[in-house]
Image (cartoon, rainbow, N blue to C red; front, side, top):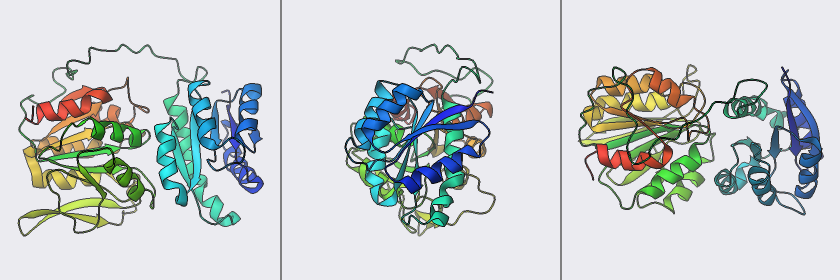
Length: 356
């Protein structure tokens, strides 16, 4: 197998050395070069023709955002941003500009702290491998774009009855590629609709508050990072805090969010399965589950529970998913009612929820 060629762009010599060591322990990775600023980064990309770039946003001369625009538009390269928590809002700007994903750099530059990102960084590189049709690993597939004016029905025998009820709750799960996908969905709603939304986006602790605030600025809905005891209300969006799980219970006749530490068995955090299974028993047929882009199978157990309780399920189609992992696994359960491209998700919620 041909190795994935990576260029590391970071103005810190210590960070460059550490990131290189973390990556080169992987058999399928070769760090072919590094750059200390954006201008040098462009030169190295042209000369070395890497498959992927890791990028620090804070650099002298040409900054990370300018380089990112060039890498994603001119070179169509996948980029993984490595950024400190203090730059959370910049991370989401980078994702909107086309970065594939990000890794949270620890606030301390001590070697023991920086090494804490090793597992996450290696996992994100694997995800990059999954989302790009590398010619030497898997064949490129021809994608047929359907008519976006109608929903793509899942083949007969692989879905529910197709008769849906008005909804009180939309529960969304996403991972790689999720932040810009969620922003597109929420900005697509042209008014505040009378249903609540809950979201579990795989994300580390410390980033979801800035993410929720960013979504809130471009949405008619009231978007916030969920806190323990928050009420699930029409017109409100609750984002599960990074590194924690979100569940629900009825208190005094009102549905309340509970924020819980993940269990050792939770592979993906915040867990989409945990969220969906919790809300299914409360909302039953009046809940819609939406599975967006992401690697892995989180959400596949949850959508089964949603369907068992009479709810309905949407999955993002392959043509728009950055990583068609979570949606594929959801479809494989046989309970998905609609599989639609990202730009049809909001309209599908409105239509099937009885709000059109």
